[in-house]
Each structure stands twice: as C-alpha cells, then as structure tokens.
Image (cartoon, rainbow, N blue to C red; front, side):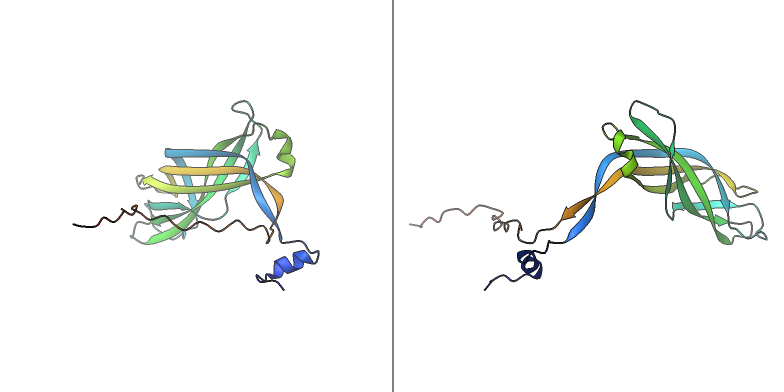
Length: 190
C-alpha cells in the first residue's frame, strides 16, 4: 500500500504517461522603446454631428497587436517587422463633450535571429505593445493629430515544444529557513 497516494503517479505506475503540455520556447527577441515619437494619428468613430475643434485628451493601446514581416534587413541576421498597434483615444469636441475614437499606430522593430533563421517556418511571432500620450497636441479641425507618443514594443520569435510533467520526480522539499540573526551563546552571570 502506498503512503503518498497520487492519481497521476498511480496512472504512471500502470503504464499511463503523465500530463503533456506545449510550452513556448523563445528563439529570439527584440525590444523597441520610443520615449518621444511624433506620430500623425488619424482617428475615426466620432459622431459626424460633433462640432470642431477637436482636442486629443488621451491615447492607450487596445486590442490585438498585428505583426507583419518586412523584406528589408537593417543589419546582418536581423528580421524587420511592421507592428500595427490598435489604440483608443479620448477626444473632446467644441462643445466640451468627450468622445471615444479608434486609430492605429505603426512602428518598426527588429529581431536578432542569429542561429534560428532556418527555424522560421515552424515558429510564431508574438508581440506585446503599449502606447501613451506624452504631450497633448493643439486642437484640430479634423480627427488628425500630430501627437507625441511613448511607444513600447516587445516582440518574440517562439516555437512551441512538448513538455511532459512527471509527478514522481518532484524536487526535494526546501530546508527550514535560517534565523534572521544568529543565536548568541548563553553565558552565565556571576
């Protein structure tokens, strides 16, 4: 009879394998940080009857970032990508009403793909981005602003690989924590 009963260990003893997972392995990565990027931001989605001028109040990233490979190389073994970041913006019209508008911010970033160029066919590109308005531009008569944005993009070239969990091969337990201050030996008083 087993003392520590675990269903997955019991299945493993009968010939069943443990759980199988797909874990992402990062083959290459790239990061782009543009603290003050001047961008021509075209927005849409505001009511047609809203009076001008429009004032841009805030911009932030929303939705799924799309990545497209560009056939240009900036350095040896680098792959250049065009990253399209969907944004949502708060716009104030001439009467002071606040509207929500949508737009897209585009930027380029590169991955140093040294050693993994032959694995591009079996990999996937994953991108994370954030956008923040740095300075409010002057009011505009249409929904096109020359905005100064902070843009951060992280892009990863990922390949998913199988991984198998083994219940019986658990790491040993951690040793008990050491005291913060060492104990001083007791001395008798005379």
